[in-house]
Length: 459
Image (cartoon, rainbow, N blue to C red):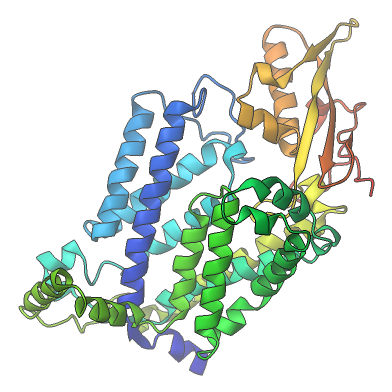
């Protein structure tokens, strides 16, 4: 009962407003970079080109021009509206649907931050993050809220807490504990200016491996404790800053730091704002104008639906369902035998980040019942990124085999499709990845049963 009451305890809205702005800025950065990639990369989101779609979402297809460019521009405008807090509910819902649509277009572009952003996008629709320091409140000061129920912050803390913890659990494996693949990565990055010589030291990969493991597993515990919170946050900043300098992982470091900051007291942005207003006159004038405007109407003290006692039961039910799904999905790889980094069965959506170096090579063999044999090179149909991902992801290998089968069948040539592909994981040698005797055109991908045509990893 006490836990339930704490979920609905009034909490300063300042942290939620801070995250609305951070989320909007990161949304703008991400969709803008995707838009630039769309125009620079050949065949990116091209309706006529082959796309690796997610199973169950094959119906999600790219729009023809100029509709695709129009979609990106409208998502950019939606992100700006979120930052400003104008037409917030419409903007967040539109961005959530549009961003998820773009995310589902191409599996070869999968990134963990994209998946996390899909979760955040839909959750932000339900949070009253526009009810202070926003354009809408400036226009109607009577809409202003000074407090929100605690669950509105807790759900955001929970999202990043699970990412950290499962990221740590995933690091408890033989390769990571012996510094692989960090040993190779650090050697490759040793030519970087300033930090390169440190990265090239023999002990650096092992230090990073064990510090990263410790940080992921314990950071939430240290963030919850008020005394250790500043130190944990400082470590998180250093950790994500180092990742940003070494690896190309998009907005993920900024997103992680923004979410991690929500573990501080909910009023921390207000205190930082007051401190900065005392140092910068223009900020002080802006704050004074805001206060004068807000004095025209008292803060809203009536219940929003997020805090209304009548909605507590459905809100609790929704939070339990969200938490259960968010926790159980990363565990599904335990349904499959073998090394998940090799088989990829249950790898996505599991926060298994930066754990492996994996390469592949090969081709497909097409045969008909009259003895015709033809070698098909994937690069004839795929972009460089698609081809690179194909060789190391069995579900994509299977999808491409079905694509070849359907293509020949449309030409009146029923064929069998075989994959002659080998791959390597971390510092192991290349080995045969897919059973070359299995007709992949007859196989189907399962989310609950292992695929016996994926050959086991030879340790």
